[in-house]
Structures are given as C-alpha cells and as structure tokens.
Image (cartoon, rainbow, N blue to C red; front, side):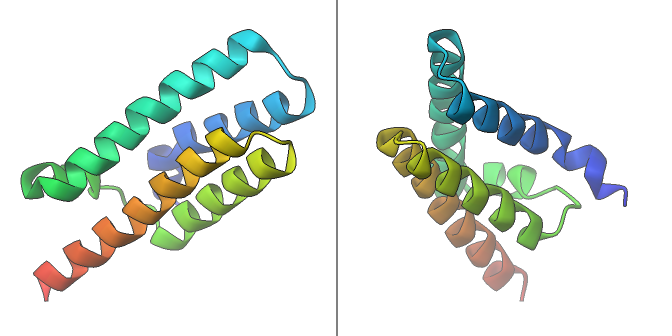
Length: 108
C-alpha cells in the first residue's frame, strides 16, 4: 500500500474534477485546464524522451490504478458536457498506456 503515497495527487485531481462536474466554477475550470495542459505536455515529452520516461514511470502504483483514474476522469468530464477537457484527458490516457507499454518492451 506504499503506492498510495505516489498516487494521492491523482486522487485529489479526480475529486476536483468531480466537484467541477457537479458545480461549474470558472476558477476551477481554469485550474483544471492548466493542470491538464501541463500533464499532457509532460506525458508527450516523456513518451518521446526515454530519460524522462524512466523518471515518469518510477511510480510504485499499479498501472491498472492509473487506467481506472483516467477512465473515471474522461467519463465524468464527457458526462458533464466538457468534451474538450474530456478529450484532453483521453489523450493523456492513451499516451500513458503507450508509454508504459513501450517501457515494458524495453525492459524485456
């Protein structure tokens, strides 16, 4: 259960997204767009730069946990009508799946 310390930020962001979906708030929307943009940028950079990819995948949390977090995030955002933000998180999810898969192939 040590991996929970690695994943607490993702759970907090998921809770913020849930609050945003229930209570539309302009400030929270800006915060989520900035966080999502930075996360997307870091995932894309980590995908194309192997040195960053090793650091990015240094978490002890199981990959299934992140898949569930990203799926819930996309589902909540699309259901609440924030399709662009949900699409950004869908891309984050896809890049994460590909980057974790390419790291596993390199370790074999």
